[in-house]
Length: 110
Length: 117
Image 1 (cartoon, rainbow over the protein chains, first blue to last red):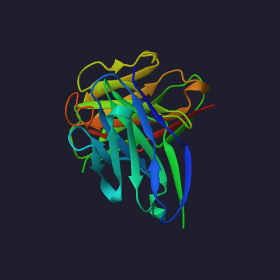
Image 2 (cartoon, each protein chain N blue to C red):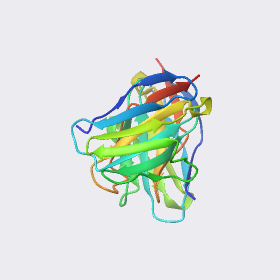
Image 3 (cartoon, chains in turn blue, yellow):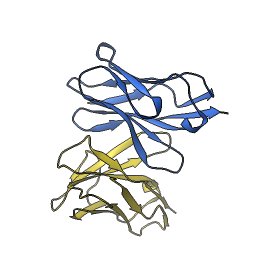
Image 4 (tube, rainbow over the protein chains, first blue to last red):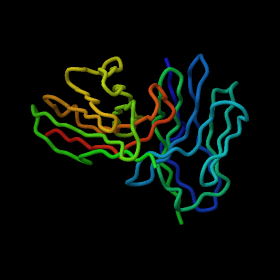
């Protein structure tokens, strides 16, 4: 069965700090990987996705993620966060179906 | 583009009554719509997948007689929670896809908060 694990439920950072959110998945077959973001009061939005090719994927708003197949990981990174990055971030994996992690709430202090 | 709306955004109902939640794709035709449920501090759980004009496919453990899904047109799917109970209180989110079976092209609605008293 598929599962997705996000390492932290709450993260608090100061502006300009670097961000890394962990995501691990379990699935025996080929996967497609996603990070979604949900800003307060808004819809889920796609940040970035990995299907194949270069395992380092760049998304919107300066985010990137690296797929490490041997570690079953797809961690999200941003070198310098802004107050406007305050949101909830979801890692998701498609194997047989789209399965979400529990989410990480990021609060950026200005 | 690819906007999905849900109505209502929140609803409170009494135990034993039924509640209908609408999901609409506003600027595209959605051949497939998905319904998710989210519990506090937990991930979104897929409840069912519906293709326009067909019966919905429910995930294991989801009662199809309790959660009635209708996808009668390419822009509208409805989820009806029948004989609601307090344990049905949750956040329900729909998503819509432009291609049948295209799991990765999902556009999400804003969600509906259901509270059953």
